[in-house]
Image 1 (cartoon, rainbow, N blue to C red):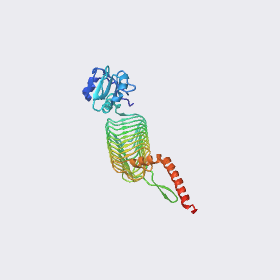
Image 2: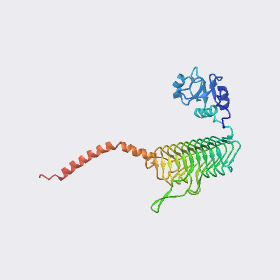
Image 3: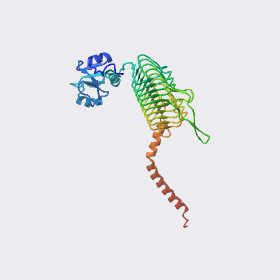
Image 4: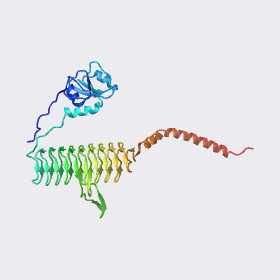
Length: 358
């Protein structure tokens, strides 16, 4: 039976110890014990929270947290323990990881798991209940595979990966190191390609695969299709939210962000650090440049230049879209002006066409 190596630990550290570890200056009681992180609204005794601007002073004054992460120019508040740092939000995220580390699982393979004889699993791998691992699979050290996962023939999973419940890794998929795949994702399903032949829709075979590079995180119920030929590629550091569809032969650049319900058609290329906001849709064979942003619910039918922000349907420069919206808001005014002008033109025409009484 696979279990945690240890029960969830409740960590405690003095504010002085945290300051020595993460830097900054404490104003107040540096010996106060911190047990957890909490929001500014809910933090109580034993908690630390953050206030990244002076406008949050009233909440700090009224709050009950044991300590507050604040900016270096935050005003002193009598009776409150403040920990001043250059970037409170970043330090708070580090504290979250410190007080709430990812669970560590004991190595081993659950008795209910089905593992092919030719599969190669590092001795530090943890395999949960009812996992299927097919022929010629390789799994690197420190990886955990949670219950109900399907790992198809020839799949490679690197070191320190986290494969969530009911994930499907189809044949030949390759995951590098420190990849996280959350529950229900399907990686390497067939691409959606059909040709009208012989009076019916004929499926285009998907003969390629999917490559996921280092340090990628893939949300729940994401689908990443295998390539027709070659590789669908998700490059280092990409973050993909829940319920995203990535079509065949896509190439997603390093550190790109793809938010929930985005849909990418086939052969889309996304540049480094590009952002695709929620419900954006991208047509096939489109290139989105490095550092570009596609705003929420936009429909992209043309290439997006590097660094550009586009919005709308069809997506165009957000500055152009704003100008268009400003004109749309003035349409009733324009309509009134036009009616006045029509009346004046009609009057002038009548005067011009009036017979000369002389």
